[in-house]
Image 1 (tube, rainbow, N blue to C red):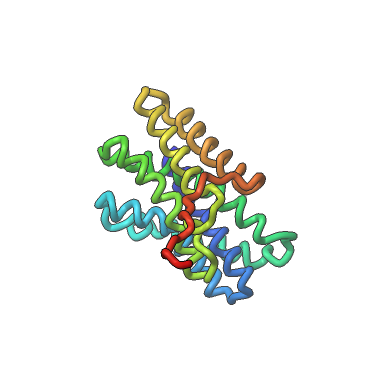
Image 2 (image 1 turned 90 degrees about the horizontal axis):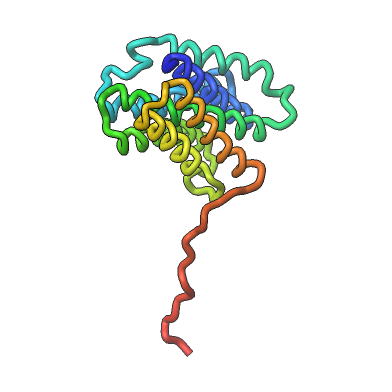
Length: 207
């Protein structure tokens, strides 16, 4: 189960990285680079924080092969897609949802407490997208008003909570991933946001 989620998360995030390269009209090498750093970014942060060294893609290079294969696939099909931005957003939502559960599950396997495991899921789910946006010159998902990190938090927290209650792995993972995806889908489709902080007007004492 965890292996399937891991490969799925890597592949989907790699696709979003390659789509970002496509939107910039970059070459095939850039496609592979964007796909790789996006696909393995979150898992790399997870493994470093958990002390699982060497990190997963060094132990098993097949993850890099998956990223490169996805990059080649997107290279050939991207120009035929009606809206690369729309597909990127929805693919990112799927990858984020899977990795929110995956990061928390791996953390629990390593004996991490429930609270830190939730945060580990959030960081695993969001870090790859942050790297993609930074190197692609796009506004970071962290700076957008629409819900993103909150969706990962909801999915990760639900998965960990159900695990704490003794739920089997599959139902807990599906419920957590589905929750993260639904919340993110609401943000994409309906513009869901959380209340934002607004500073009061400054009073400098002038007339």
